Picture 1 (cartoon, rainbow, N blue to C red):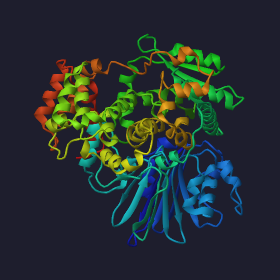
Picture 2: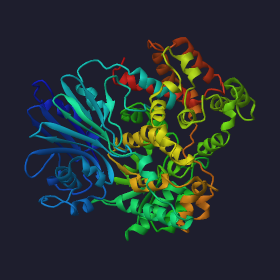
Picture 3: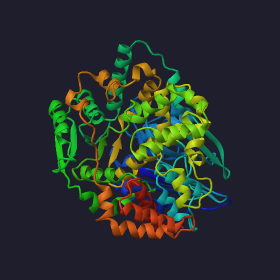
Picture 4: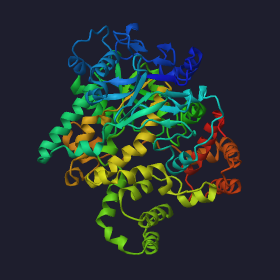
Length: 622
């Protein structure tokens, strides 16, 4: 796991060592073990290394092949690199690293090598002879890559801040991305919060030559892969899921440093730990964050799993107020603004300080095995498509009359008021933060509304493929395009790497995801939480784990914002109110209403403004 950066000049520009060093210095936390640079004529490549596989200096990057023609920088891990290595003939390997295998595979196969890779990665390869730069990103978007392309140069990096460091002109807000952020608490699609800086799409490679992108290819699509599978009886499906889960965990144990695991005591983390115990004769290293306050503590469930699988178990005591104490550090660690992520930062710091460099996480289980309530809600919508035969206003009024809290009624009304019951209309509502009405009230941005966001556009464009999937898997695919990739994975990467901790996620294994996404609803339909996963692993998970009440980090942020964080939040709300696209008096009134106890305003609705203003101010963005 590392940080990579590059500058490719056009029009006779020459690489400057100082510039590429500035970029990697901004990402020193991603690779504290070593740094390296390659500068020649128009190209500069930089690398920060966190040593995981082949700890020798011979595996440092930028890495040059035997002929001297190709130079590569690579962030991530190729878990099946030994299997790929066996398929490559005629290349003399000098290291035992996955880095050299990846470069050798590209030299032999070109872009076709991507079909062999199982891992998380973002990498760039410079061909000195052809003067061509090849850049690629993993299938599910686990590893980030940002880039800027203008008439004079192509910049890329693992983190947005590295590009901002050398961009050279005052950055401006990307208002289209701002709509995404206010709608979903993070930026979706291919843009970023900064105008002119984009994200390379997951499962995509590009080639840059003669000052432009000459080729851009999306080399994998979940819907195509899933529909290629065949499904027999339930017993065979469960057996195959177990095989793929074990394979996924086994792959992620490949390391030359010790590997640990987050253990909350929930279904997903417990499954990962159980499979670790099966995959390796070594006792798993597990880590649990516990609290003296019973309303937050789940450690008794983690203790059950640690005892069952004889793990080397470390319990880390935290006070809830540590989240307040670490708040500034966590916000400073954010490479891009996010309404989430503070929890990940605090937990990653605690585990890193306990001596781990690599940790497995159970994130992704809910997305893959229909663990969220809106999976069932989308099924209900699909079963009641006949409702869309009534006028939109009538449907909305029906939603408002249904039982429930004011927030639930508003959400139901909005769902029933959608133009259609399709995935592109429904999913954005499920993941919505601020409603379109609230955005229009608090900002002067044009085109507010979920249909104006890049996520909606992507879902609409891909609808023809998405509807081929079973209904539950349509939500899974939408999650990968939306929240999972752009909030969950992005936060995991930026917050764990801020502490030089590599997090590996077995539920984001390509082979596992492809198989589960095609399973018919009648088999995947949960009869209890994530029942298909649990039944596939039986008798691994005890009933106390499977049927426990899901808790998680439910800290009193609403109380903190009104008290301990009041001054901090009010300052950022006031500053944000002065920005040209904000209706300042309306936002200040919104803040005052929250402080006065207006139950229709959630703490998270306030927090996204606070985080955004803090991030914009810190990075000097107007």
